[in-house]
Length: 267
Image 1 (cartoon, rainbow, N blue to C red):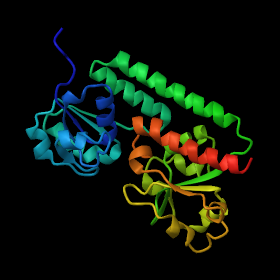
Image 2 (cartoon, rainbow, N blue to C red):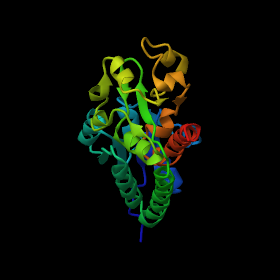
Image 3 (spheres, helix red, strand yellow):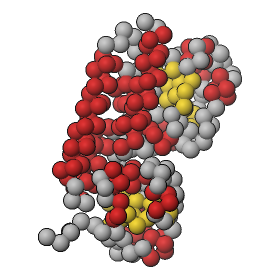
Image 4 (cartoon, rainbow, N blue to C red):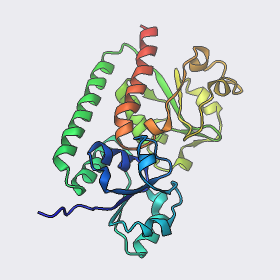
């Protein structure tokens, strides 16, 4: 049968691009986000047509896409403009680990790769299960503060909080993780973080380099266990803050490595 799947796809965020490359379907991609770094070669091979909150609508329309993939309510305005221009747009809103798996399966099915997609997702799930089993044997679980942004402080989104749990730690702001919008995860007073006494601080400042020395120098932070014991780490935002393959593989692996080292030191 003639290939009924979309032939000309624009990906407004990185995770769909990374997934289509993993599935061997990159030939279908005609445009990507300028923030794409996974896989690295996508930047050289595909035209960059969007940021996160903005897009070059004329450029996208000139590519004559038969499908556009985007992420979250934050891209609703871009989606509306494209829909009004007659383009098919699918906006996913995955915020949890389970929702990421669901989104990846749907994308695979849409390009005729449901079977391959499912096999890859089962392998990812098996790896998560293996990490969780190792973490279940930890004598102590560190308290982890994950910081998405520094000024103001923004704590980790839901899938990050869940991955911290799988990796063997406990998110110190689990109640904020349930808030899908970054503005609702702002911690206005840094002393609220100090009060929760995190054992580990992980920074992922949305494309800006993490500065552990700046964290250590924050007023009143000298007695925070993570600062006292030098447990300040960076995980690149491309590895953990993209709700797609990266977070479920490299992101959680880095979390588990950091947490395992802490556990070994406190055995």
